[in-house]
Image 1 (cartoon, rainbow, N blue to C red):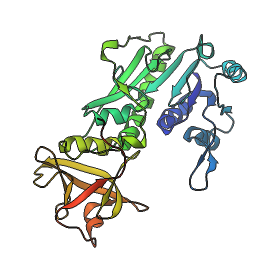
Image 2 (tube, rainbow, N blue to C red):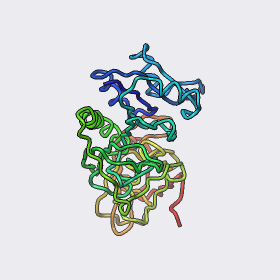
Image 3 (cartoon, rainbow, N blue to C red):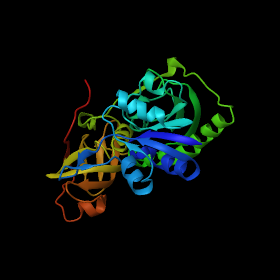
Image 4 (tube, helix red, strand yellow):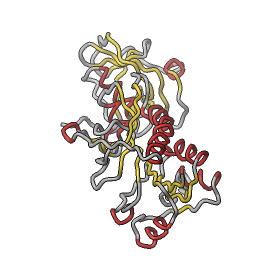
Length: 313
């Protein structure tokens, strides 16, 4: 099948690679190169970088506005039988996609978690299961018809970054299944139940708050749901560090927000504790708690100061 691919983020890479190995990619649209790194040099998107390295002969566009007339004319001129859109980052206008079989891979079980950060939202909410949905493009964000879904359990120890990669790896099989159904004329379209819609808002650094007065299970969800970005940064006896991986458990005997350095646990509300498993000192590499604590002067009741954000009122 001849396919046009529109995407920017790394979430779409496994699917693009799979499509390129079994189908014909007739063109790719991604976002413009952006400043990155300490030198702020222009860098391509993950999709743009992959295309330059692995598909140099495929037309590659990097428009600031995919709906600009000259861009629409070129993209609509590609001989594509299907358009696959994954983590593209620009809204597609009706004139652009009119008359095209345009489908999107979204990282949630729609209608749950429409929006910009569905993977983070699922962990933050304590969902036990998530997945991917392939949908048609609609005027409202992520409100299209559902053409297929895949499911994946959420382990309590998984971070948003790890779940992102797992769901990205699940994407190719689901997308290929939907495209095969389309080729055979047997696509099944299901309307989303609007009464079940939840929203996954875009995250910012202000969301990196942690409230130790709440039960440890909530703190664990926030740490994992915000790793790797924006991350939960704390001050431990004068040392700035990010909490990367934790475990909630019973036994928080001290005042909430204080660290038992010997156990590596932070007291939380309702007699619970957050066991610190992995941290990353500012400017350093991730390390297990014993390695971090070794050689540092930590008292039995070291206060933990959260460095960014604050709980909503």
